[in-house]
Image 1 (spheres, one colour):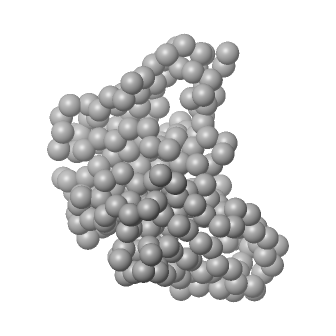
Image 2 (cartoon, rainbow over the protein chains, first blue to last red):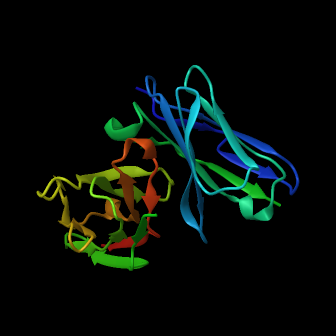
Image 3 (tube, one colour):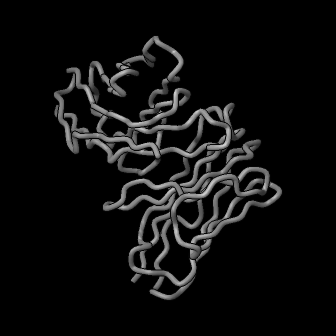
Length: 115
Length: 117
């Protein structure tokens, strides 16, 4: 079974631009979560999608948004990029959400650099 | 809000020896899960071990075991017979058992483990 895939793996953007990152979960998984990893703030939860609905949201500004499609693939979008948005963006998938979530599997991440 | 603290930014161990990584957490919940994840240089997060708060028995996975002290809110990871492939950043993580919290993980700052040959 293929693992979680994220595209692109590396991305360079300039301040003010917007970016879209993609995450394809493991086949059959319906929950996708996104995390931002930076040296200063560590790993922080962005949001979770399950069955095309946002179930949880972390403490990030409205410039960060996401969505999930009927095939469970998820995208996250960052508008008006700032230098501080440079980070490794990780997504994780699981079969379910809530109390019976089971194990979460992480993708390899997308490294975003904002110049 | 829950917090997770790893007080050891870096640790080192000799190959074949044992090392213990520390983690403390703060929560007012009684139902939760704790995890140790490993992040090698490839940056792929890999689950090492998990512990359900309602279980008194410490979890074990081959060379990896935990010391879960619920009252003290402590969750340490012991790696026995350390191997070169164990070198990585290790993260302690918390997940609420409340259904409304979903899959949200709260991570500690991480401990960089070096294994010396």
